Image (cartoon, rainbow, N blue to C red; front, side, top):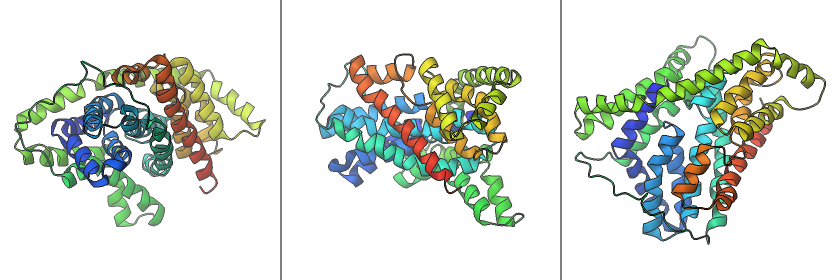
Length: 375
């Protein structure tokens, strides 16, 4: 599944689809509503792309919009980066929420559906509301990091094709989730939608569609497309090592019965299991830095909460993902990536990036607690 996600991301990046989506949305929303356009762009681009890859793709777009509109860099950039962060922490098929869903034995399609509900207010508060506080905060574009885009010898995709291809896995998985909630067991439509909405199948279909719409349909050779796939899959090895290491540590925690001890403590208190899972992930995030490692480790500790019927496993996935985003600081590579590309001091990065990540985390937790009242 990670490999298919990387392949789809490569197609979106190399075909110019990301640039097409950004340009069109900025044109539609107009210069006065640039943050809204970039939030939507970041959300669309962020779903199929790993966070670091998505960040490096949107940075030139942020710089280009900043230069053309003469708006402050953080005012332009934070809405898009917030959207990327939300998709990274909440939504399958990203590595952390997908792996945590497996640990909690949660339904991935329902996790995606609930995650989309929570993602909207998180992006609005952290991206638009918080981002608007930087409307008068001017920082210079960093020198040496702005590079002209290479000429694309092939045609670029149309806006509708670019958006549809990028959102194909989400549409398929969301369709399966809605069908499970509305159709009776054994219904033929439910069977079909459940099959094509399976995360692996949905991403495979999206890659095949992308190869046609963003590859062959734009005049690219099949050999070039396959080379792009091969290059895109290489970074997945490191992500698999991180997930494998987190899974091994999780198993140590399971075998040591640390989770069972935690459940005993929980039964003796009135704390919400969602708040407990969020707190564990948040503490690990602050200590370890990596959101993925924090989420996987927290899932190993809190796994008995999911199997014991204390809360919806899908909401536990989202609460754990939200906790893993909180309070990013100097031990997180994302902190330094944001600092250098946005040409900030450490204090400025703490006031912008760290606060933004914490807002996403807290709004995600509040969304989980609110949904818990109805699920």
